[in-house]
Amino acid sequence: MITILFLGDIVGEPGREAAARFVRSYQKEHGVDFVIANGENAAGGRGITARLAIDLLRSGIAVITTGDHAWDQKGIADYMATEPRLLRPANYPSGVPGQGHIVLETSKGKVAVLNLQGRTFMQQLLENPFRVAEEEVEALREETPVIFVDFHAETTSEKIAMGCLLDGRVSAVVGTHTHVQTADEKILPNGTAFLCDAGMCGPEHSILGRDPANIIQRFQNCLPAVFPVAKGPVRVCGAVVQIHESTGRAQSIRRISQIVREEE
Ligand SMILES: [Fe+2]
Ligand SMILES: [Fe+2]
Image (tube, helix red, strand yellow):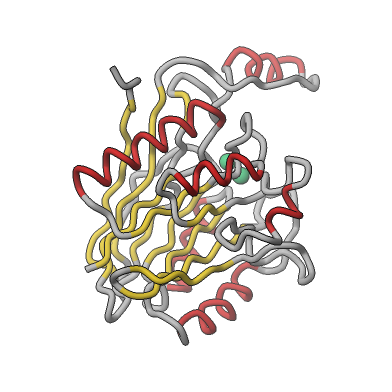
């Protein structure tokens, strides 16, 4: 059995710190074979930088996925072209820097990670993720049956559709982007673990990890505003999936949602 820990969108310094601390302690207590995290909001809530990606990769995260905020930080496209463990959604037009998938060796065999982005209510109208998913998965299955998909999308219906499409062909389809964890974790009929949204790693008393006051104001007056990352306690959200490495079928999926306190 191979155990994969996945963490949802890491927001700002509080999210980075808590995610790294959580990975360390979870690894020590429970032992996991592979850690994946969505890092699209790692840099002050917007995007990720090379330095922050390196820090996250050093903290025990094997692969960083992203989404619509992938490119928010200057210079990241150049870095992405050189660091295959930092993914961008696979359904960007061809020629865009970076990769949407990776296959890495573990002590229990190869693990593939595939990053896709939805189109419903998303700003960037990327290539059809359902078409790209099928092509990518077919190619990845030549290498390994253990395939973890981060589907970065807004609506539950689009995410469930992706889960159903890939059921039996990948080990897990877990959603990101809304920053709010859903409680619909399940093993689909043909053995794929599914969760609409993993939730975020970020400040508990916040809206998407940002200070509520400024966001409320934006809803009230519709004016452009800055949204600082909120302060206070931090919640780490994600899921742990157990997968039969020989078949790629998921055995279990369990949600993670935990306040991570400062080390004493
Ligand atoms: Fe996000
Ligand atoms: Fe997003």
